[in-house]
Amino acid sequence: MSIGLVLGATVIICCIFLNKFTSKTGVPMLVIFILLGMLFGSEGILKIQFDNYKFAEDICSAALIFIIFYGGFGVKWSEAKKVAPVSILLSSAGVLITAFLTGMFCFLVLNMELLESLLIGSVLSSTDAASVFSVLRSKRLNLKYHTASVLELESGSNDPWAYMLTLVILSIMNGDVSAGDVAYILFAQIVYGIGIGVLISVLSVLIIKNVKFDIAGFNTLFVMAVAALSYALPTLIGGNGYISTYIAGIVLGNTRINDKPELVSFFDGITGFSQILIFFLLGLLATPSAMFPVLLPALIILVFLTVIARPAAVFLTMLPFRAKLNQQLLISFSGLRGATSIVFAIIAIVNTDYTGGDLFHIVFCTVLISIAVQGSFLPRIAKSLDMIDNNENVMKTFNDYSDETQVQFIRLSIKEGSRWANMPIKDIPFPTGLLVVMILRDNEKIVPSGKTVILAGDVVVMGAEGFYDDTNLELNEYTISDNHKWRNKRISEITIPNNGLIILIKRNGSILVPNGKSILRKNDILVVTAGSQKIKI
Image 1 (cartoon, rainbow, N blue to C red):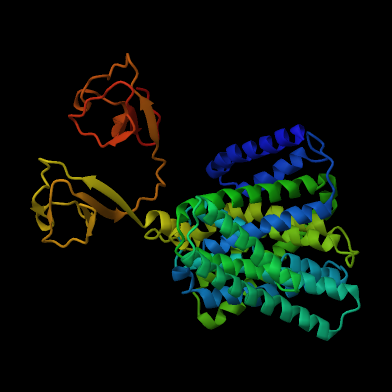
Image 2: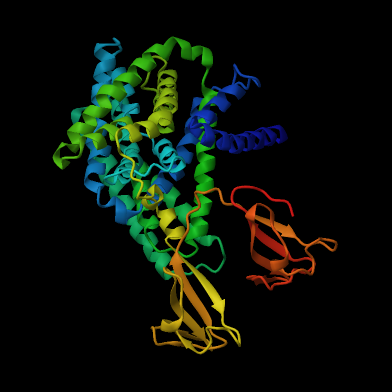
């Protein structure tokens, strides 16, 4: 057990540090996770023997629940609803078109068996939300015409359709199903999946709004339970658990929940760990020597997917919406394949009805090349197609952005002798964009107007537009020791290297906002900013 824990901790630490490398080089992070798994695998350095497809399916399927749920949770519906019709059509009809065209290409050109060809098409028919989100967020791709919202909603909602097609083809492979059986499978997958997803979402919102949890953190546990339940219940009766999970994620993500920033941070960690786990496990499962025989077919399939199947699906489904050509071309190129395709391939392999060729390594190679090539070139393609919008921020597409950065509040205590004391708000020269939103006076909450007079003893709550830090601004803490050269000096008397600025002083458990007259004392903890560079004091 200890060896396993050491190995697991080492892998996670490596992935975290490698993430910094990928953000600088432009190589998608998920590629590194896969390659790291292969490095640890049977033909790598540590030569870990791992070929348990059933175990991998169980682990990856469980991890996908939280990835898909959080994909829905992060959808900002006020933005997404503007593009919901085109996104949903892309995620449903687009998947069907992509699967059919890819399947027929494998059958007619690569001479594979018909059902195996259609199975490959089904498995590879969806785009990967984690891969698309990773590129959009890390590269700050601010796209025109709400394209980021289209890609977000489409890539988050098309996995259930690919999963459904995979199950249908596997059922047909069984040979004992009729057309009526296939029709019922489709009915159950869609109707039960959507119905239970909506039902669980409604009940969950009612509980959240009417029940106050007494222990901190129970909101998080409750949402985790909802995510798991929304997947498990429909699967028990033949419904599509991934559709249900995604719907629950969207509803809860757009519901006012106590401690939501903490919830976002928690799920950021859970989904990040889930992605590391899935991609590392898939890399561990892959055998490099088995990849060489299927490398050429996988490359041919990816080229067809990228150049023919995906563009055909995009242009046909977006035809009624009269989308601009450059938008359609970018959406076509943004069809990154990812972990879900490999997981669906594993589901097919462990199914007793599948007796075909090396589906896992064909799909594995296709996904690896797709993420590496398409993911790396996506920012350049967006720029060459004139799809970059420099006046927008792609993070506004996601719920966690709006919750954390749209508006921020500060509080100021008005002391005796303050310049603001006994002044009406309209006469105070506030900076543009700063607004007094509330005054706390003797346990009374006052909603102010311009005529409201601020009194000594008031606590003034002010609001302003939040700041999203994409400038590498760093805050560093320093403690004033007994023999520090700044001890007992005023801030105006000292010079901080690199144009540093003391923005906060922590003293005896209190927080002080300093000015030039503030004197630094022993054991003061200074919060200092100096751009992107560390400073020594």
